[in-house]
Length: 154
Image 1 (tube, rainbow, N blue to C red):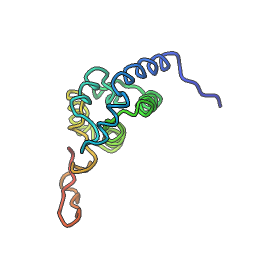
Image 2: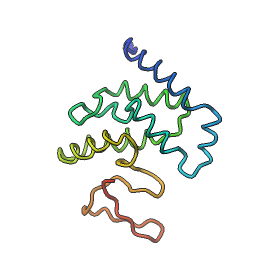
Image 3: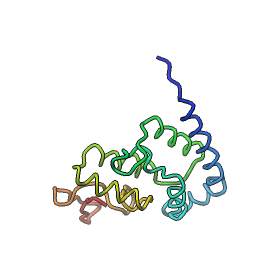
Image 4: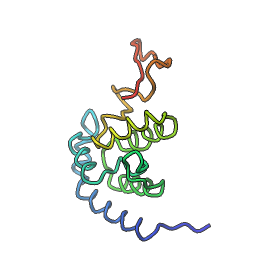
């Protein structure tokens, strides 16, 4: 089987590559790697406000761009090429994917629409010192090094 990207996908790739090259120079990557969060929230918000990358694979019915895995893979490849320091995988791939595949219709409408409006990482958080994706009141308590945390929709 032969696979190739369409001309539209290649154009999307080249535009994204140019954009990310400007936003993620080597000095900036090294500086961000030394920070506690590993990325800069304002820069991440700006990228999403301009391109809406976190909504690439969210269906249009939920306010996303409605593209498929191919476009999401292009975004992941180009972010990797640019070494972009951002929570894209945790938010747009893992968390949004979990909501799309396991959330109720009400949760999808509420969480994905809210995510689209803000276009940052506040709605879907996975990681150090933040909420873990889960559901309130469904046995989501867990012990983290002696302290109890409740996993909940962020």
